[in-house]
Amino acid sequence: MVVDGGPSWTTRRGSNPRLEEQQIVDIPSTPTADTRTAGSLLSPSILTAAIILSWYLSNIGVLLLNKYLLSIYGFRYPIFLTLLHMLSCFFYSFLAVNYLRLAPLQPILSRRQLLKILTLSVIFCFSVVCGNTSLRYLPVSFNQAIGATTPFFTAIFSVLITCKKESKEVYLALLPVVFGIVIATNSEPLFHLLGFLICVGSTAGRALKSVIQGLILTSDSEKLNSMNLLLYMAPMAAAILLPFSVYMEGNVAAITVEKAREDWFIVFLLVGNATVAYLVNLTNFLVTKHTSALTLQVLGNAKAAVAAVVSVLIFRNPVTVMGMAGFGVTVMGVGLYSEAKKRSKGTVH
Image (tube, rainbow, N blue to C red; front, side, top):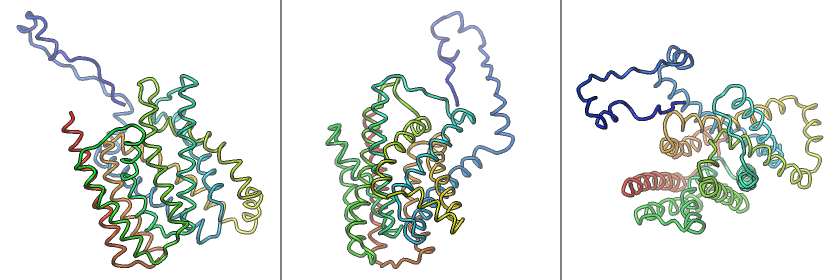
């Protein structure tokens, strides 16, 4: 982590005329052992490329594993699967923050802040459970097409909740986002109404979480980086999901143990799936740390298209030319939206 060391000598010279006659020599700070070690092993460009590749592999991997488990393998317990994801995220986040020191530990400072994180956990649970459940009914390609409309819902919730309005250019960029998904929906051979509605709910929940997160964790004392936020949200989400899983999915733990006795491969699938689910969050954090939030957004636009192509190649789900065209229009609209948002921020500043 890079920490600014305060105003430089060059900035302060003008405040004292006597310093103008002296030659000021900036002495660079001594690099830490961690910096020297990392630099000797990997160049910054190679490290960044490796992190971005890991981000792509983990994001696409968790989608494909969820689809395989819930739809093809027949493990039809999306709430329990999400519960395992949350437990995994808590375990790995605890190790990453407290032992690997990938991010500094940020404690919860007040009951008010705790309630805010709990609110985010509820929305997070809803979004992830709906997303996993939709994969039982929809192909990954169509799931990703719907997920690409997140900016549309974000813009709606921003107006409804924060009364924040964007420029006309930003709203115009959302038109192809919606138009593309309409084309893709009408042309989807494996369209399933319930799956579609659940996936739309997941996308809306994801957008709502981002808006609420920006709203309720805005003060400097309450801001948490994504690693610490996940550390606190994951156990709360698991506690929320447990009674719903027991009530709606029965004695799923015993059922899973029985399945494991018959086929040990399910243990590998569940552990691997839960681990990759955490890697999605870890690589999100690392990509943002080594590049920027805008780069992550651009990569996300391309990820949806890559995931759709990979899923079609693996699962062989039928696609139509109109469906592909609609997905392409949606992705293009998301790209235009990102550019419009960038220009809008530049104009404001």
